[in-house]
Image: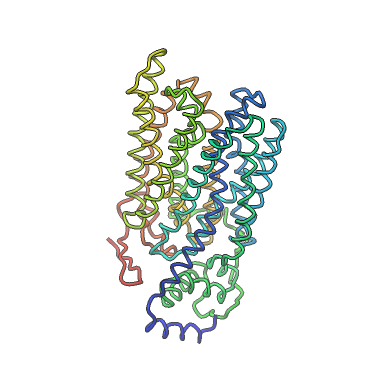
Length: 512
């Protein structure tokens, strides 16, 4: 993009009204990027029901079943650890295609598995895809979206995860009618089908403008920004902000340039992120790791993976009833994730996180108490305790879904400086998947050691500690341009921050 094109763009912007197709284009990009998460969600959801039949068919012990359920998240550490460097190397878009390829191969291997080692190989391959997808989808969306709708669009991966989970639950219910040794293979193998269409669809997406700038492709970056900004003037402003964040002088305006001190392939990132971080980067890293830890350590995957087991302990004896109740969990989770997505740009990240974690604490406390009462009164049908258990499972996933679910991905995809974003976000995803894997692989043993009610009371304690952490350490990022985000961090207090106001299509940052 030449200087004359920029000047012409400014002149046009003065008389050009906002074009609705721009926001629709950004919306479409976010949809395509986030659809990777449907396959991820499907894999998570389908295993909750398939595990019942896999255990019987392959004659697995509880420990083997726990490992099978949770190991996907441990395997995903490989993908999430490599995703930052890969996305800096080949770009955000082709990293999404790569994630789809791993999903496709993993689903086929699991569907055709004949024994426990075979299915574990399939879980490993699918796990790599999970790691890639969970890091790259929110990062790509945050980098494409304008600040005014970044929270809404960046929540899409979590929406599609929940849609995938719901589809997995529904698949469990319908394929459970097939013979035992066939049903679970259909449940797992059918996940390969959408990954083909996903990989093709993603090729129609543009590359992230911030990645393009880091490659010196200013002309291509401006074309993407022009299509995803509310006005041409905003596109020019966003390009200037990205150039400054990348250390590119303002007078370098050609379509293709050589980036000064280029570090686009991730060189020096780990040193700046972990070895010698600035106070702001250190605070950002603590905030990212803390929110990812809290999201998983508060027990959401215990509910998602082991819903049938929880409902069995609560008093639902029929497998059909357990699977139907699990479908209800998926419906509630999906509906409330949509609510959270629609209000994240209205009420802000911090308010939703605090409200969500407070509701999770109350729900987990009530769930743990009711399950303890049921456990201590064997042989008795305590309808109030059964009803309370089922209800609080629903309220737990509902309160999780309005805040801790979507906002974690929104928050952590937007707070890192542009050069550190991909690999910084990958660290958060690695911790997220590690905690998810630990919960998934230890929940049955934890339930036996502490009782199932005690396990949920432990999760309630984590939720309480997380609420204090969010209140103390997390500043509000609503409406803040990505290139200004670092100014919010460094003081380790969530209250001494900046006031962000919108004036037309501009974002004005004022010191408080």
